[in-house]
Amino acid sequence: MKKMLFMLFTAFVMMLAGCSESTVEQTPDGEDVVTLDMAIVAGTSEMPAWQGIVDAFNGSHENIQVNLQRLPGSWDDYAQRMTTQIAAGDPPDIGRLNATIKTFEDKGYLTDLTPYFESLDTSLYTDGLFQSTDEHMYGVPIVSMTQVLFYNKDMFDEAGVAYPPMDWEDPWTWEEFAGAAEALSSGSGGNRTYGVHAKTNIESGIPTYLWSNGGSYFNDDMTEVTFDSPEAVETLTFIQDLIIKGYAPTPAETSTIPASDMFTSGRLGMMIEGPWNFPSFSEIDSFEWGVAPIPVGPSGEKPITTQFVDYWVAYEGSDHHEEAAEVIQFFIGAEALGILVDNNIGGVPILKSVAEDKKEELFSSLTDEEKDMIYESYQYSRLTEATTNFSELQVLTQRVLDLLALDELGPEEAVKQLEPIFIESIQTGE
Image (cartoon, rainbow, N blue to C red; front, side, top):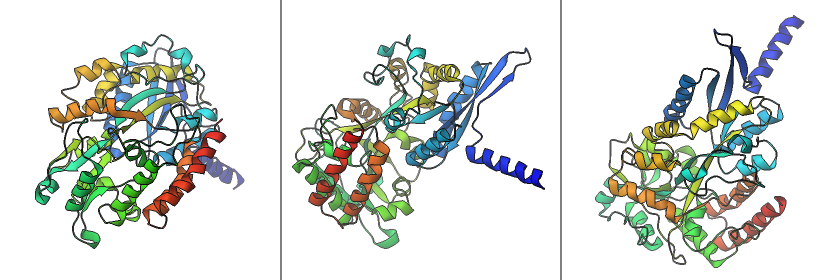
């Protein structure tokens, strides 16, 4: 009985650990074969792309194989899962991180990949993507994506609203944007159709509006907080008004039905989002949709959209850093990036040659004018203002922003409450 209980307990522990330990086997010729575990967060519609690059690597490498594991949930869920596995001494060999990479780097969870990429010619890639901390590179860029305005053309036609302009130098104003949102909104209760989704988070919701209105969280070198400003109050007022006037669904509604599902079902007219939606949106056959530049605020000089960069990382605790680096080198090569393009994943490819060669195939659901607009969006973008404790910062700021969205806190007071949270975030990271 005790033996059986011990075996059950052992199995249970292995299950909790995720069974992510890499293995070493042998080929028929007696050579070692290392099997690496790679864990990523991804939607189901993205998996053909990620599995495709893994299959391409496995098919061309006899002595290294990769086992891909998709973890459902959000980026926050993924970060918590990885933190738990690292603490347990059982991380996957390879992972994918977003802006939270700074948190993982600060905690010593990532392998320094610099020695494995010293010969890489980074000039062949999009400028500014390869970044290092004190001459150490802990993440290798996978994709670079910008947010644009997605819109339902059929809803615009039915409401008699002109499509948004396609020129980044002459985009909609906030007033025109809100006017369209109002015109697209109709109905009530579960049948209500909304004009726009107004996200209230500090990574993919607030920044695009804030920057396009002349504001920011921090100064350029992130040594001072600049959030407490008229531009920030104006930004939060605009976003709150979209929600309380009924032009945008409440957070409670989008927690039940995600905004992307509202859009694909024809219940949402516009949303400022990134190209990670292309795989699911390309399957829409009930209406025509398009993309356009984001609007500019009354205090802004031009629209500034958010650029997101995801990174391949090798986790500390793995015994196979060299093999993991070889996998990552393949993943940022032309073959793998071409597979991402073929599956509508990742925005404009980070390898300049692939971006040029694959332009006709990229974003296959879009017109040539829309493709050019997305290529141009990088000239009007900036990276997320992420701190070394970005995960904690997101949690603390969201508590305030949720109250703003519920109309339980005014914009001025929200700015006053958020300012010290931002200050603490850079003091903690020093």
